[in-house]
Length: 93
Image 1 (cartoon, rainbow, N blue to C red):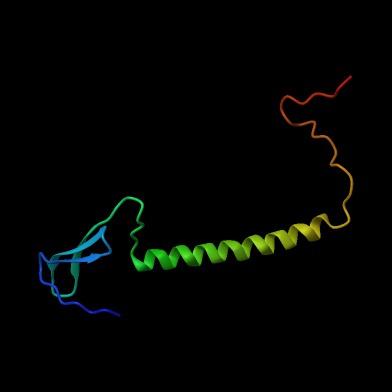
Image 2 (tube, helix red, strand yellow):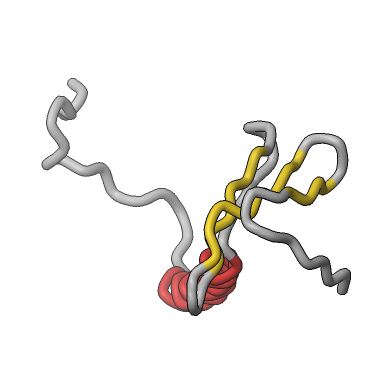
């Protein structure tokens, strides 16, 4: 990890396009300004962690749901019966 000391109003460049500026220094926090192109995603770490956890939980749930559906439809063959309650569907003559 690179550690750099900066004072209020000073900046750090990350590559040619991303600039981090120290806007304010308080007792227990630092306010950062970030200048970056729109195509660069900038997220707080806790937001990224939550996103990753949600995606992992979703994938696990999807796999479990698919296994459950396989069990429900196991042994079912042929096409399902026509749905007469669907709007616009009429028996053909």
